[in-house]
Length: 269
Length: 255
Image (cartoon, rainbow over all chains, first blue to last red):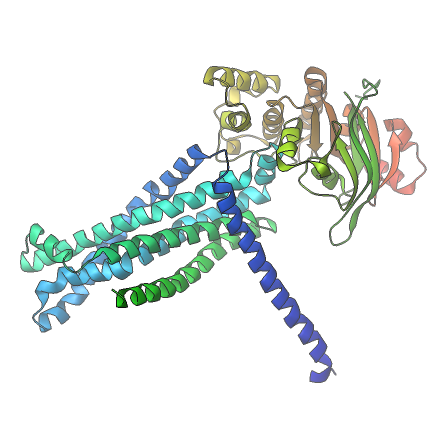
């Protein structure tokens, strides 16, 4: 019978192997990210593919973002109304919705939707290309697959997620207006002036900055998982799944870090 | 359907010396190989003997552990990325599963390398070149189809056309008849011979199909356990008294 004493060297070996693997994977990911910046500023530019990816990421996500934005605005206003009415502050509903949406919800919710829709499709698409040798086929025909597949996709998410965030915010506002107008017969100009009353430059800038960072992250994670897919079709499914799980996890970590940073910045202003 | 007469001259287009490659265990254990200009060299062997690894090293997809690989007079280990890409344009690689870009039509698959490497070509000349190349492999009617709509044999033909469009000097075929029915296999075999004749290519054909080996090979090379066990004409290789070569022959149907 094996004792704990006998198992100790094996446990030590597994722990050290795990630590080695962790640092090796960080090194691998860092190289992948650094390569993006290197390839970004070298010729040729895959302009056509980048535009195609912008269309896929941006335009094709519009229906989902529209529905989610409108519903979020309506539901958020509905949930807030009783509390505001209790304090006699229903006139503050537009400003409250705006602060919540622009400071918090819009970049995060848009990125989470894109991570599920776009990040997973990057993982699956590139994964399928890897296991069917399409990436190798590009390499042997002297086309840089990283530049064609990864740079174009990451650029698309980096620029399209902020655009979708703005759109999401506007739709949220519209949803909120429908609810406020139905309950209080508030006019549209009055709603708009209340909506933008408490929003300052830092709110807009931080929302766009966060959306840029989240877009870059979800694009990078999706492409990384797909680009290095192994083990056939099972690996493709795993790549799509990991793309969503890891990018969502990273988005929340980034949210905490960036929001903390912005709070510190605000305290100096 | 036996191929007769060597058409090559003495110019060596690929020269490999002492090539070794290991993954978790040794795969290639000291390969020496010469491919002559205009020659079809068939590399035979069981699965896992390193046949595909050999052509992946030649095309620069894998790097060898040791040994030298000279392609068209260039030592590939000493080439920069740009020089390697220039060399790759002279090498066509036909993948086992064709590796067609499945989000693109047949025309776009052929257009893809042209768009990246021949930017001065007008739309009209590009289309003409695509049509000519597709016609040469008998796939012109499928020009606007998606890869998913093609059969296995058709995909192979388009895959070969996509490599031919850059007019390569060397063709590397990885298991060209794998997974095809006998009639389609014969069609692909004929296509390989036509490519050699019409495009004046030198080729390495990786296969374990003896019908394909006999019909396409000017010279054969048998790999066993990562080493060359025999080489020569079809008859010379299979006259060998090596038990593994004999059993390889016995388990194959040869016309």
